[in-house]
Figure 1 (spheres, rainbow, N blue to C red):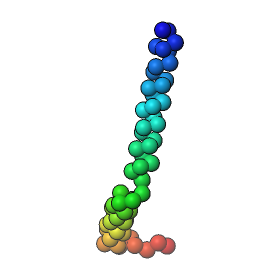
Figure 2: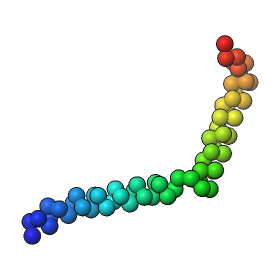
Figure 3: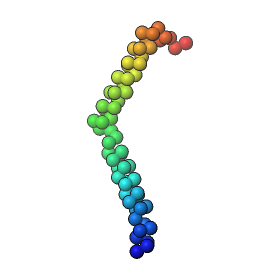
Length: 60
């Protein structure tokens, strides 16, 4: 029975890691990607607007 107690923690960790990777892959793309892209675009737009208001909009 010593081999069972020695192998159980690595097997459990491997299963949990696999489940984590599968969850991450499933959550990429689709409607989630569109929402994330929209949020990033909005953040960039706010930052650009703030930079334009400060008068530091010149890139030279």
